Length: 397
Ligand SMILES: NC(=O)c1ccc[n+]([C@@H]2O[C@H](COP(=O)([O-])OP(=O)(O)OC[C@H]3O[C@@H](n4cnc5c(N)ncnc54)[C@H](O)[C@@H]3O)[C@@H](O)[C@H]2O)c1
Ligand SMILES: [Zn+2]
Image 1 (cartoon, protein in one colour):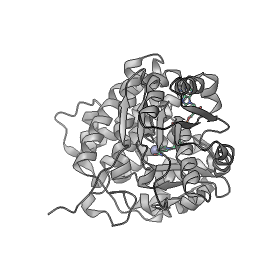
Image 2 (tube, rainbow, N blue to C red):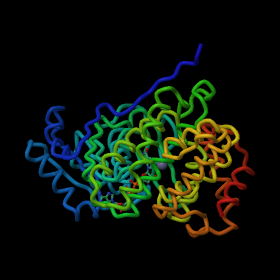
Image 3 (tube, rainbow, N blue to C red):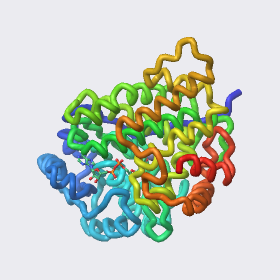
């Protein structure tokens, strides 16, 4: 008899080029009349914020926008967003942007609904009750925050990324219009895209649901998450390089938007592991992007996990389009890692801690902070010690 597991995602998913134009009617049909739009100055300059607000107003939904934020937003920015939007009294919160803005929208909805400050809710299952309904509209293809149960902020003081996970953070609606990512600069496409690959590979190689300790933020891999990951990895193999190299290729943007969505559904259930644990202190200290740090680390962590996940890595090779016929499982698995390294190189993601600006004397501190993020360490298929983390970072240096 298998151990029971469950699977959760966003309440409703709307997908397709042009679907942004449905945002007002969606709010109206749910009887939401006051929408807080959380976005940023780049998307304001690209007219996306006005498009959303005008569409809302055309359906008699009042709109108020907050755009004074930054990529990888801080705890302080979250506090500012709450204090500016509190008096508006929204009945729905819309996160328009990459993972940074969607996560900020989740945090603002949480604090407006439950009081206190963002840091009260860091960790798993700290949000006490349902929050304002969320609509997440991704403008990058990568994070999967549009369906996930987490939100990440930067704690500048601790030089660490901090996150909260709660079923109440799952958006009520994920509205995915792949055309919105056409304006992404090359580097944003590459960094967010490789983050989706990290999500899919870490979820695909996570420990099985039957082995997951009770009360963790994640359930371990299940038949549903495995199916989602396989499809996500195949789509990334087909479309990521194309989306980076040909900025106006809508088919590639659609493929990557699907991949990010599927990987988000998978990882927010199965879990992510050592790549993400190591990225938290790296990103918090070196201020690299989440995708840049994760993409750099991925092949090094795969090498560490190789001995316990040969079959999965061999399958990843095939999903990424490698010809492994005639190879034994070990060689095919190694080919899976090389395929990820090659993709990382082709889209211009750094391949070492040094390239991200890190110093050798920082590695031990990074390893210690990562080791403390037990909910991620527990998901890794091979048991990990502090000295393992140091060795991974040494090899990545
Ligand atoms: N909640 C989750 O489940 C989850 C998962 C993974 C990552 N994250 C978080 O998401 C953040 C990273 O998100 P991201 O990779 O989407 O990048 P991002 O949201 O940080 O955006 C990067 C930059 O791209 C710009 N941008 C976004 N869309 C654009 C567009 N269509 N055209 C032009 N410019 C655009 C933004 O203004 C920003 O300057 C990190 O903080 C990370 O920790 C959250
Ligand atoms: Zn990620």
